Image (cartoon, rainbow, N blue to C red; front, side, top):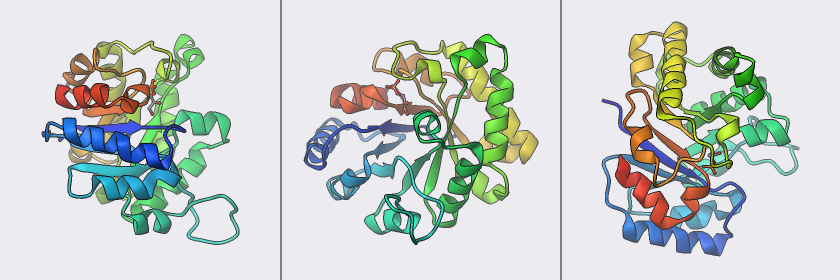
Amino acid sequence: MRKKIIAGNWKMNKTPSETIGLINEIKEKNPAPDCDVVVCTPFVCLSNAVETAKGTNIKVGAQNLYFEDKGAYTGEVSADMLKDLGVEYVIIGHSERRQYFNETDITVNKKVIKALEKDLLPILCVGETLTDREQGVTDDVIRRQTKIAFLNVSKEDAKKVIIAYEPVWAIGTGKTATPEQANEVCAMIRDCIETLYDKDTADALRIQYGGSMNAGNAKELLSKPDIDGGLIGGAALKSDDFTTIIKSC
Ligand code: 13P
């Protein structure tokens, strides 16, 4: 059985001081669940997040990293910097980064490799646009994103990666993929991993769904066999909603 993993992607929301408040609220309402819980905050909030979450089952993640170790890369943040703060997870290749910050499948691959080398657990985002879906190329797009992201990643390391299937048309739109649609793509991603590695690796790797997941629809989505958790945007900013989703596991 794969342990479920619920991660909040706060995106560009909450200040460092607000971070303390929100994590304290989650701590109070946290039902000590049987699943992994992660909050991915903006870089400047990470230190407060790690401090506030200390001693609880809440782990902290970043929303990006750079693939070089150090040097003249103004504005970038390295894996070592994140590790030094006590960060354990990192979101890589979110569709907003692909869309607004020119992330490509190749940079995503470099970031996955760097995160694994430095013992950070990558939450790798893949997903099709509405046009992709309408043109019937969802599987092709997601298989391409997945295959390139895993280039030169060993079998042992591949198992540590968490893949988040996030249909771009469902992000922040209130439109959720149906549990059947979401499960179908997650199963396809698992098949892709089996083709790249083997069944053992595919069975071990966790695949989340993300895209307008909320307190009302989480239970049904999370009950599907190939959906091992959620990557939650808007609903992760409200402690009641986020902890309800955690309890849905
Ligand atoms: P929403 O839950 O706000 O749709 O965002 C999903 C997401 O992009 C998580 O990474």
